[in-house]
Amino acid sequence: MKKRWIGLVVVALVGAATAVYFLKPVAGPERDLTLVGDATRGDYVMRLAGCVACHTDAAAGGIELAGGAGLETAFGTFVPPNITSDPKAGIGTWTLEQFSDALSNGMGPQGHLYPAFPYENYALMSDQDVVDLYAALMKTQPSPAPAAESSVPFPFNVRLIMAGWKNLFFSPRRFEPEAGKDEVYNRGKYLAMGPAHCVACHTPRNALGALEWDRAFAGSPGGTGGKAPPLTREALVAEGYDVAMLAQTLKDGFTPGFDVLGGPMGEVIADSTSFWTDEDLNAVATYLMAE
Image 1 (cartoon, rainbow, N blue to C red):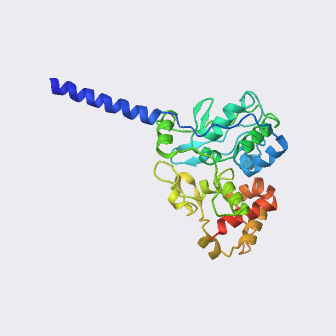
Image 2 (tube, rainbow, N blue to C red):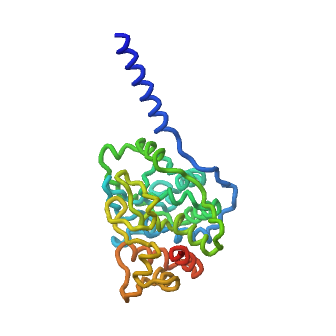
Image 3 (cartoon, rainbow, N blue to C red):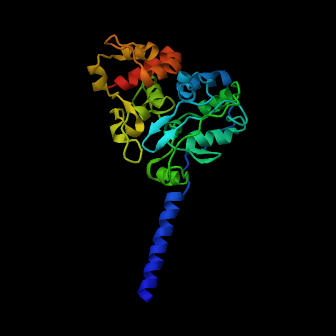
């Protein structure tokens, strides 16, 4: 009987320790949110970060930023929400602190956010970019129409399980320039790994939907991350790209083989990269084509 009680106590202690580990908060460095936001610059950050492409259902004639088309994954269909300044359907009542927490730590007013929202990448963003983006979104035209509901089955609809996922796979940090590389390369790396989150789409994911960082830009065969080609230097060179051609493709969608990119990448070009400065297009191309 005594051994049985000891066994139960051990199991209880192990269970409690496991729960503490998997439910503990995951947060990155504190941000300086006293910075003054520039809404005009934030409009550009919005294009860098792909907000319009993801949060607008253009194919259905949806209002800009009022909710995107559903993203189908192995865990359910996630619908990008309304992020206009509407106080009910959108994020008009969010404080800068709440907005920053969502981008930096994957925590929204409703609880843990799913990594279908690429907060792993947005966490790398600079404090100024976050503050400027918030200023821009707060000045958008409010849309009172709520986005469609996501369709996520049990148990994935229990947001609390995301605490465990974060403790396993999420290590929020800020971008740090790579030593020995110039400003153009590091700007491109910041964009591709951070706000533009190229790595999120063009990298395979494991069975739990986490990015396989050791295979960054190796391409996604489908499934949770969707299907996307590799963006390694070797793959790009094989397709006929150099820095100038890759930058041009990101601007107008025309490939070295005289094709036009469509599908999700076509949307990204139409609503995001075609708005980038030539300097940023060149920076991303330089980073991806680097040896």
